[in-house]
Length: 315
Image 1 (cartoon, rainbow, N blue to C red):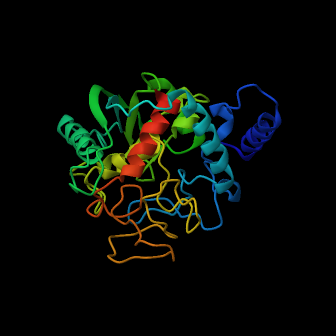
Image 2 (image 1 turned 45 degrees about the vertical axis):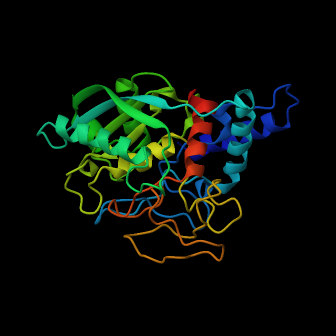
């Protein structure tokens, strides 16, 4: 997204916030700008991290880091939308998955059906809280494979990250509605990136997650080949921020049971503690930047937030 488009959205947000509408809900299209495809101080705080990327890849701005000035508007909108769902118990949600295998003409990236099934099994294990019984939350989300599509296209495979490349790929292949998770495995320079649920109304065809094909279970990316990149990105798709989103601020990531942390984690450093607030950094949380082998949990608070975001934007 260009800086000018971000400015236009910000202006629209201000106008809507000041208007005397009878129902004080900001349209999803104006709640938060979509990620900039070029690093910009407009779309992150001063301490924004570089992206979660394979070893040796060039640093790039984190596409799923939300500017703190946007968070308040997002949270107000979600609370307003949830008013219609007040008092309703959380329900188990079965999410249909359309898996797009985007590969090069020479076959690079043409992952097997076995790897795709392993990826779905990993998602279901992680979202059910099975990696850390008694600690990890069962989020009540289950993923079922609806379709696998294979696309041989060098351009789509190698350029899913630019604004034009992403739009060309997704608009030609996206399937389903707001409740369908589209996963594109590509040669992205990131480990992965996602759309947030509050972006859906503005660009439905862009909705979903993009992952590096080598991050699937058994893939060739050291430390990030257990399939947990898809878990991390699906957490964003369901409304979670990074655990370090608010740094050491009071709001943190808008989830009460994830201790505040100032910096994202690399590896799995036991005892990491970057904020004065109670609790060690949640290095085992799927929404940090730890190695796949370090990840093992979503918290009950994160499960509630995902259920709320689903009800507000995807239900």
